[in-house]
Length: 324
Image (tube, rainbow, N blue to C red; front, side, top):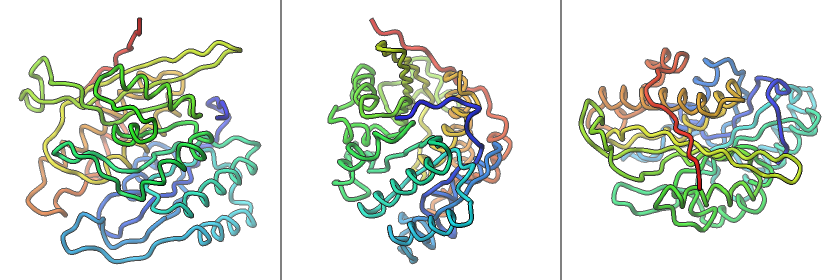
């Protein structure tokens, strides 16, 4: 992918994700944090639903199709509104035709900005459930399109463990497995890779949530730099306790925070990870503490967490991984 440097990009983000009237997933989860952190956000809603799909009463609404996305793109281009968009962020995409239309958007954004538009791709394919069973949220054949057509154009990719496995064919059970998967993802294109939800073990200190021992969630980051014929990868991990419960929109929030902090701290991957992780944990903890038995009560407490988005608490330390 195109190598970019901070300072050459504008702080405008085009975010193509789902929209819900009530609740916080997709663009509803990503836009507010990006705006608080100083980014203008041009919002394209890939779906317009009443609520997210996890509600027992179902949902209603409409899906934006590829040709409709291209039509919106034409209007923006005709009015000169694509200049200055420095970032493209994509999340859940439900069809092959829409994914290919997103690639048209990216190419048009780059041609409108002297080739400069950083693409942060959250390749939403699926996840593991509480029983450790992996399941797809979208047609499985999208994995191949991401691998062959999307990632070669991406600068940053933020898969969870399930998605990284689908994209690389590597079963991720250890840190070494995750490192190998990162290398494969780098080879596909992105210079910055985050695996956002790996679980490698139990908290050795017993310092889980409120002192309770529990499993740790690991975010692994790998940054590849190329100097002539020399390729070097820089790897960091950051661990945080897992908070009980199921919360939607967390991946969308995480991708937005990683976009923001890797731009604002472009030369300090450690700091970017620590800030994103501190905010993520604080928001999920606040949501957990005020949640009840209903799906609605488990919607992210995003607005109530304004302070921890603007001023991320220093809760966890990122550790450089040295490979022998």
